[in-house]
Length: 551
Image 1: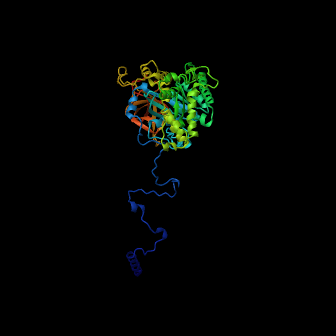
Image 2 (image 1 turned 120 degrees about the horizontal axis):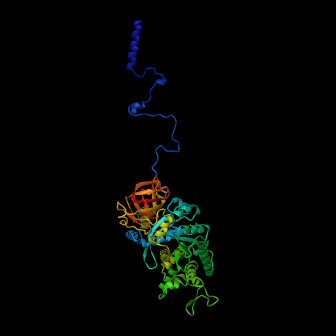
Image 3 (image 1 turned 180 degrees about the vertical axis):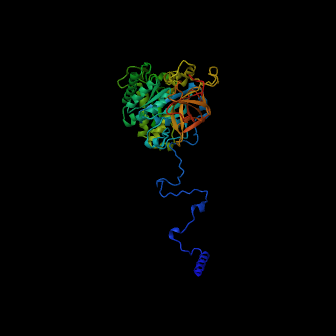
């Protein structure tokens, strides 16, 4: 027995001398170090036997930059200085807040493109393609239809060369987006109703007229796409005149149906109707077309001449006078003779006979083109000729300046219609006067700050969709960047102040479709894009002083 014990001891010593030679069961073998041995005892290791992450989701996600809209990275070159635009903001009498509305595909966005090209020398439409500068969203460009209202602030000159600050909002024409039109009308003083010359008054046109009248806005009309009467329908000039007159009469009939104001009448003679073709850069009123004659022949009172260019008025070449009776059976109305026939001749000459007689005809009109320009295709050439002949859209500016009130003049009507508080109060009077003066309330308010009142009607997301900026109109006072404000929601009342919140204004911008101009302050009468107040706003809101304006 002792010998057997000695043999066992020898075997144990032998195993220690040769590790790895012992017999170990398969399940007890250790091929790899444990996680604790690799990472240390302080690291917790979790082992999952089933996948909890789907195959469609990557383990390490790539960095994606979301971008939903097309925006300019830098401020583009304009024909005016940005400081000049900022200075015009302080003079409310030189400001016009205008909504462009109309039926689907009646040329609103294309018309704004013409204004953008007029004020931005480096922004040009590509060959035979629409610029669609106010179609910011990628979905709008893919579908070819406006979805969101887009504000544009630019400086435009009238016929006399005087500059005005135009706050224009381009609205969708599709009836499904009528809420976008409502947001634009609420902060505007007037509306320009676009009507296709070939299609005439459509169902949505009638709805927009009713809506504008209910909002107590000044109504003007732009009969667009008049080139369709000539190039597409091929109507004789007299028939084209009847078509245009029928559109004006139909709009007046609808206005008289919805409005009790007998003075609200549209007529080219009054200057609140203009004619245009956005595709070929044509825009004129009777006054601006008469001025072309005055500039060409001289010694013509174009304002008196314009009064005789619409209606059943004929020109007698023998007596050189205008009469209400046709001198001969072949006599044409003055609008046909002095406006439509020259327009027909220009379009027909460019479309029909480019190579032989066009250069001579253009020389007679004072239009000089290079050889390269004469080799252009028909549409770009026609657009270039019309652009040189009609010039800038001064007729549109004249119409808006004369028939759409400035924020100072139209403030009282706007406040009476939209303000739920007392119009006779100090705050109501300040808004009715469109008072930007911060010292106005220094006596009535203990803290001595101005009566800031800003009405926001829309929220615009940033191009990456992370946050919203509130868009609205400053009704009184002046809003400053970094200013503490009180945001009042739609359900706010003096008895229940739950729907209100104190916020701090971030940066302020003036919106010009695809780019924004950052400013430090925005006085009353202007539109503004506000950062930092979007959190409590659901749809519309009122931005005011943190305290003191309990009216």
